Length: 532
Image (cartoon, rainbow, N blue to C red; front, side, top):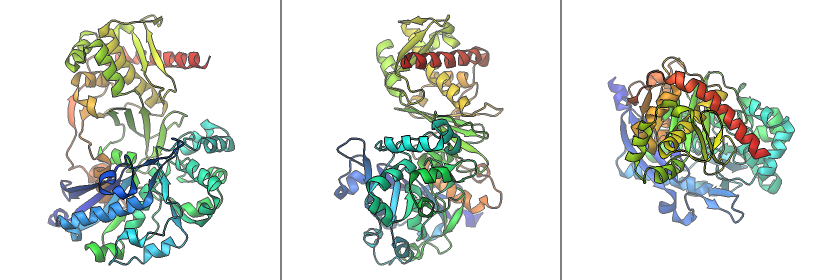
């Protein structure tokens, strides 16, 4: 045990606005943290929020050299702080999902022979055929999305293969756009990485495989065979399979850290590089979701993470391969109308007071006497609808509710929607299911009580300020023992746990079971009305 405690594990997160690192010891306690803010500490790249928004407002990119220089900076910061790199047994990381990096022909040779006397930024100055990487905020590939869906037989069929319908930000469609608009640059490209596998490549001193979990956010991988879909590759760009390389399990040990890091920073030669993954899969690991769990992030937008065994892909939400369990999947659903809508109703119905909001919520019984509300201030993602819709106990449209009914209708409606769409993707409540709540609204116990009642499961709160980063450190540790059959939950059992916030009220399922079906029908009606 002493040897374990003397060891440490690093997790990196190449996110949109910063690069973060967390070190944990053998007891999973955080021993070091650092970060580099792109806009502030690398002003020469002239980013805002870590990106460049182009004139058309649709094209959004980040300079790949900025990410390389940020790694130089963060490692130098750690060195100055006295961090002992010789204790690092393994490292892993995450990257903002859907971003892509294009390595120029000959870059692999450079990666394999880096001079430890020089920084990475100067060594890799000429290693990329595309200097500005498309990122998740980019929405300029609508034409390519339509082409891909047409080529494979429609949006539903594409989701059946890749876990998602075609999205502008997804990497396959970005690659197709680059091939069409910059064919010379595409032909100069030796390897295409995701941000995650690009970062792993830097540490490995060789091209790192794209992991299954992040790879399933590209519209290119068959999430069931975990191989590239030939149909999708052919519809995207020529020689693409060769440029992508073979995907690898998310728990795979890709190799040892390169000679460059051993000599320049004192990493041990035996330090392993565990496959890097996307930031959302990294967060699933950081929150330590288990089979049957659901995580609900209640922020500006609301996000639902699900651990599922038998996925049912649809044109709503996304199914990814699970980053910590090769036999499971994770689903993700994002809702635009989150805290901003809750704040609007609070201002209108509770005088801007959360205390008044909570008091109103408690004053109306579970199920809101059959009243149901659907509140989409801005066009929602799932379902693609906009507007405010109120229905009474007879499912008749009404124009207004009392303030107390309005508040409960909003909160119940938001959580009914989450459960309805989670179940569409294959989520099932099983004995032992937990709901892990995060984000600003998770501090409101009355909102959490409604969440617990609607899902008929206990709600736990968890502090996940650096969940993707912390999850990467956990994954580094797990990667060393995953091949011996040790589960992720067993490997991280010592980590600080989530705190029980509330349990379902008696009779909750009897109230919300029928309401779920009514809500689903009403959503369909709303969509039908919008199309007319």
